[in-house]
Amino acid sequence: MQLFYREIGNGKNIVILHGLYGSSDNWWTIARNLSEEFKVILPDLRNHGSSPHSEVFNIQAMTQDLKELFDYLKIKKSFLIGHSLGGKTALEFASLYPEMVTKLVIIDIAPKNYDKKDFEEHNNHQKIINYLSKIDLSCYSNRTDAINDLQKIDPTGSLFFFMAKNIKRNPDGKLEWKINLKAIADNLSCLMNDFSADLTKIACPVLFIKAENSNYLTNEDFEFIKDKIKNVEFKIIPNASHWVHSEKPLELVDSIKTFILP
Figure 1 (tube, one colour):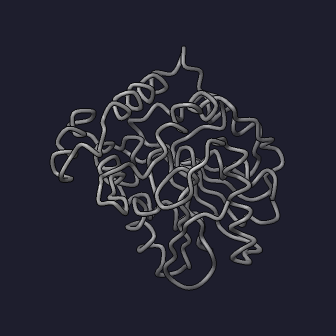
Figure 2 (cartoon, one colour):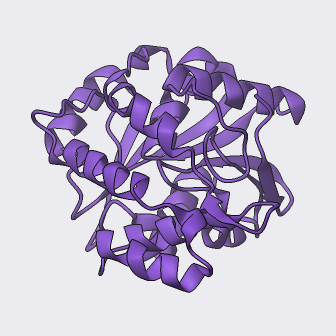
């Protein structure tokens, strides 16, 4: 699949992969900061942003989309950053194509399956999808009314901000979702649980960044990761939730630059 992408800056390549419900647009602030030293490439994952939709939606398919983008842009080697679902995709890519990744930054996700019985966020994702599926955007005459109703799912958090950015007008002037809600709903369990990358194949240095107030990445995960990846570092960003790139962009950029710059 040919992904939509944005790019900014000059220098060595950095590719940034957003997470579920996100898009390249959500990472533009981070990209602008990194573009002072690098050429930053921001793809939209399939079923997100301006990239094509598909009923096939899993980490393996997204990994091959990324390989196709590398080949299309003639990227032989790049720094690779992934947040949440984008982090799992980045890990899979680095395990399959270790020679193409200079350094790897994984933001607030663990290389594991998230069982819905043990992980509260799995159920929260399902509730979000169920709520969004009930919102018929074509019935709204303007974005403001749609955003006011959308705010009910997360009145004070960062998630609302990302969801509001997923509203667009189609060629007929009607409001619709950028994200493929049906594909996300149909494949949520797969996205949360179908992770099988061989971490021992990753050859480059790796940095895992944990958001302090998030439960996606735990101290127990750190121990597991250290057993699988020898050249690995860990960083915790204080007072941040899973949406760390929105809440603590400067701290995140500083952590990334400290790791990847010589």
